Image 1 (cartoon, rainbow, N blue to C red):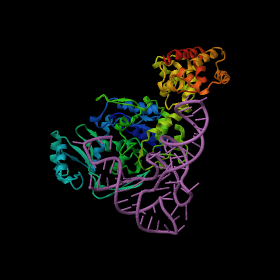
Image 2 (image 1 turned 90 degrees about the vertical axis):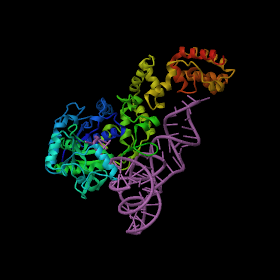
Image 3 (image 1 turned 30 degrees about the vertical axis):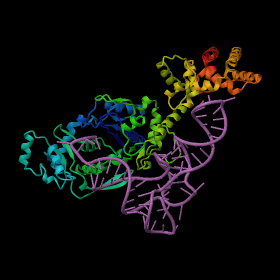
Image 4 (image 1 turned 90 degrees about the horizontal axis):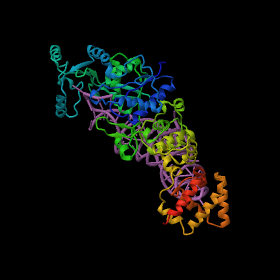
Length: 506
RNA sequence: GGCCCAUUCGUCUAUCGGUUAGGACAUCAGGUUUUCAUCCUGGAAAGAGGGGUUCGACUCCCCUAUGGGCUACCA
């Protein structure tokens, strides 16, 4: 059995889409499951669409997510098939173009884009193929002298594959089974263009997969229609024996309505569709990423892994290693999955709860620094333990705990109206007296003493506690009152109570 | 238009001919928390339609419908 070698082969045309991330993830899981290699190859044969920074973005994204590249761009050691950028492999492809030309399996065509457009207008559903190639300007209709003259003359040309009419082409897909195409629906695709001496995607992809000994091609479903062309290329080049196995993944769809998930959906519905923040170098347009939105990479990986695959059990939370152990292409679903952002948040919530308080505290502390809040790490850790379960993201912790660090500057009007009665100020004065006399401010002790006082005075428990909370927090929210005052301490507690008495209703 | 792929609760999905069609997210109702949130318990919620095949179809086949992808000198 052949060594498993898979590749992720994006084009550096912008930020890596979350669907692409999932494709990379599935490739990675499959490779690691079978002890194989994961390659990263950059498919930049279209210089017009090249975007600076996109490649670095892709590498950083995969690294953040914990998808390790064994070979190619971004790998620790580049590998035996370098270079792994197609633009740097220019010299390699020409040989195979010539081979196809010599074997009469491809031909040279001179039709300009304008002429092709004209043909499309002239003939409805025009396709450059066995039926129409005789009508066009190419090496099949021109004399060989004429062809040579034109090339010598500097005329631009392309090399097209010569697809035979009406033959069955079978694609074996690991997810979908056998898919049969009729060769007549495939056009004579351009394989190479003289303008930049570069192959197009199809040829470069097949040649590189062959040379890099790729065993499995795992890619998005949008490639299924061109799979028969690729099968044909393997056949024409004499490589059928080592042709990789194909697996076409279902697409990620819009959360609402229909269609492929796009950047616009993220903007419209308010969630990231990219792993990392990205600013388009040309337009300056910004897109938000999962990392900066506060997601843990493990949560994103877990979430994406289950969008189109599941192990058949009711387990929901998986480490990368568990995913590797469990992954199997025959458990990948066939139909597209609508992107359910709410579930993504839930995954992050789960991972936040799983993370230890000191880990969360150290992340939270950097957020606190950004807010000019300096706090001892043990105090931050204690606060994290009290509010962590309320949050989906570390960056939500501030909203849940700011009152630990800052006294309220205003008091929620509705709560004041509801909880601050005429007798409240004098009760709070009494509470101050009581708290002042307590030496052990640990939550349990303070709670017992305060409750005893309330009972002895026959005060209303809710009336006291809610006014107390309003004084300390400023709003009707937050964890257990006595946990809060234990953290902020006696002096601060009394200060806040006094401040509330002085401020509210004045 | 043509070709290809797909179709189970609102969403992600389990089921690989015989099940009260299961789980999760979201939602609703109770409970806990004298706050808010969390959490716990429970409820509602699905086989696109029509034909076959079969003792028996969500499951296999065909048709229809719907959705999606592709249809460039882009990937």
